[in-house]
Amino acid sequence: MDDKGFVLIDLHTHSSKSDGILRPQAVVSRAYDKGVRILALTDHDTTSGWTEAAEEAQRIGIRLISGIEFSSQWSGRGIHIVGLNFDPEHPVMVEAVKRQQNARLERTEMIVRHLEKRGIRGSYDGARGYAGEGSVCRPHFARYLVECGAVPSVKAAFQHYLRDAKLGAVNGMWATIEEVVSWTEQAGGVAVLAHPEKYKLTRAKLRRLLGDFRDAGGRALEVASGRQDPASVSELIALAGELSLQASVGSDFHDPEHGWQDIGCVAPLNSEVDCVWSEWV
Ligand code: MN
Ligand code: MN
Ligand code: MN
Image (tube, rainbow, N blue to C red; front, side, top):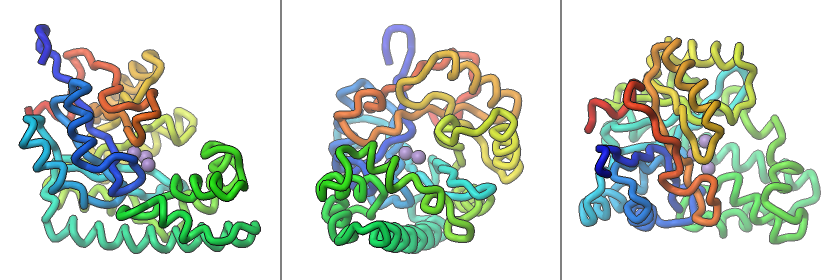
């Protein structure tokens, strides 16, 4: 807390348990060094970093909130929903993670076949190598595509190979937003719609998504995500208010070299905003 009573909060980060670069322990200590005092580790479809992160959090004195970033689908699109402050050992959560891991495996196989059709060989082993002990995610394929010379950069890998609509949200593969919200709630947590601007929806469509999300029991909207235009933060706060959703914030940290989404890189919210963490701290 600084002398004005401000506490830096980051409720969206990734470790090497999914597509982040740092181990869970290192994510927690980096967060502390960046001044974050309330943190959630939200790896894609897994809570496997929880124990390691919680031990480190206790050791250095940072409040760790349990977290996960679920992949889901809505209206033929991939939508990410962050679950926060649930019991990681709750049977519903354990089952949900298993199901999501199976869906990820299916998606991984689909990417491998898609790349093979386009003349890229060995992508499974290549991506696996980058994933290490974590689950294989698209950025791992991207790094392999750079390594084998198919593209000059990770960005180009997404543009030319991995952002294919077919690979984003395949009908029936990911859970629906209703399912994901319900798993999170049953495990005692709250569901947050992640990075709303990333989906490139029109305002009308975003309103429709948020309405459906709220009707399913979703409680909050991530209004600040990484380095962002202040005008868009205010707009999202207004939108959250209109839809009776609370506000959440998170950097979506993956890699220390990505300064625009380093840990703690979130716009501060003014004290009138109804925040998702208000009951926890
Ligand atoms: Mn990611
Ligand atoms: Mn995401
Ligand atoms: Mn994320």
